[in-house]
Length: 166
Image (cartoon, rainbow, N blue to C red; front, top):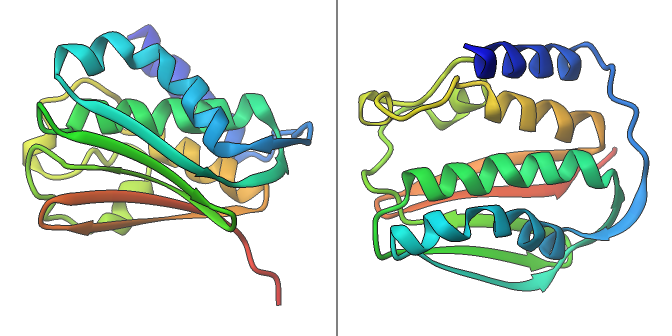
């Protein structure tokens, strides 16, 4: 229950624009690697390999993006097929986190950014509140980034890139 309350409070903060980012130059691939250390035991337990390559250097808030990658990598570990791989790649203009899910996602991926949406029935038995991706989306929105989710039969990919201003 404490976790649910904490997540809902954090979601509320990010929705209400209470975020005051402290910008510093960061390589988001290196930051994702830093966040992934927390999941070493889970990766080993599920025999999931973790690889990263490239870079995506931007000016943004380190603490906020550690939260973003904690959620995205945590989800990738939670929903990856045992013995598969999680990849992080920066190409200079974006970064993506990709995994092979234990089941193909059949829902509307746009809805995954909404609060309390945990995906389809196959994902409903996993622990979590369903607000993590909403928090991620709000952080990205308040810091000049956008995210998209791309799925195929055996791939789930979250892409983060700078917003393009017209």
